[in-house]
Amino acid sequence: MVTEKSGERQGSGTSGLPRQMGLSGWVATGSSPRPWPELDTKQTADVTIIGAGVSGLMAAQRLMQIDPNLRVVVLDADQSANSGSGRSFGVSHFLPEHLGFGHASGGSLPFDCCGIDRNQKAIAFMAKCAQDLGLPPHVFEVAPQVWGAAGRRGRRCLADIAGYLTASSTPFEWLDQTSLGTMTGSSFYSQGIKCLGASNLQPAAFVNAISEHLGKWARIYENSPVLAFAKESGGWRIRTPKAQISTHKIILTNNGHIEQFGFATRRLLHLSRYVSMSDPLTKEQSIAIGEQPRWALMSVDPLGFSMRRVKLGSDERLVVTGGTSFHPSQETSPMRIRNASWVHERKVKERYPQFSDLRFAHHWSAMRCFSRNGGVVFGELEPGLFGACCHNDMGITKDTLHGMAIAELVVQGGSPLADAILKHPPPLTLPPAPLGALAVNTGLLWNEWRAGKE
View 1 (cartoon, helix red, strand yellow):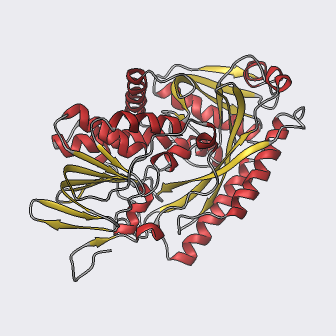
View 2 (cartoon, rainbow, N blue to C red; view 1 turned 30 degrees about the horizontal axis):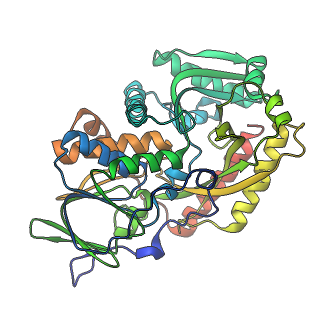
View 3 (cartoon, one colour; view 1 turned 135 degrees about the horizontal axis):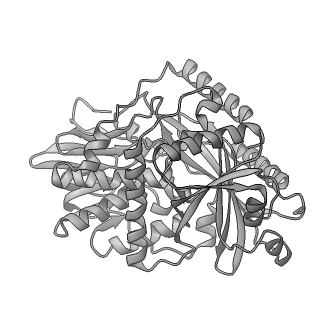
């Protein structure tokens, strides 16, 4: 909100932050990251980025490419790898997340060939970063995107996706039950589609590697929530609990938390997705699940359950994601995580009935931000104040895309990429709280029920 007295646009400090619950398996199984200090001295900067998830870090990376002489500060209220993108499922893909809601569910299938091209550029940008840093395959790996269907509705949704890929001249191949079984070690899936152009990540390790690289150029501070910012001569003044920053420009890449500063209020849907990671697979389980050491199979339904096989050090594990709940407060609950973990375990047993002794070691949530109409918060919100938020759960792909584009807008005044995103509509206003919450929760329950076997 903006305070009349001081002219400050105040946030709510740590009390209004998205609360990420449950220990992320990516963090628990990864190497300890370099700890970034808390901001406790007065700073000056050309550009200050608020939010050190993938969007913020990729914005910083692009700024460095455009003008390495810029003085850049990156702030995060928590630890960067604990952001929503660092806690995600870790699959970056170029097809719209909502394709499963095509005519198989009574809707219409949007077509945007240029959108596919932009998403592929974002994935290529990440791949170049990973290549330059020499990241190992378990941290970042270019991989095919595989969609799998189990039931009749899933196969209808696959037909939608095939039509979309054909219309966009994107090569793909059909997979039968045998091919899917060879890849996953499960006979659960009856049909699938595979196309090139996606990537699989260990998201927390990827975030840590990028921040380590950027830390040689930019100043990065963690555990430094922004309490307020206000206009001052020549730019902006940012206030944190222990210090201030005088900066010419600000970029907000804090996704749903942007609402706490008075932007897009009552326009953003805060949803939590749930992820679980298994104990290390036994030798027998590893053999039974097939020879391919790393794979990801995405549910054809957006509210279905997706699975990955990952190799972390000497351990192989299964990772599953599924289940969505609506939280206007941006905070889920231990009960929600516990319920989601039970569902995850049941879904894995449906796919691998032979794994009666498979246990899960980690369960966690990842807050994501949506809008009713797919609109985004992107562009110059006030003179010298820019935003790149509300990515509508295209996950790391959109995080990267918007980070790249906002950097180009800030330094260059625009670019084909930024101009295309600026054409997107702003988020629509939500219905009044009780009615809106009822509508969202009812819609989620209905679509999860309709997803069926998927």
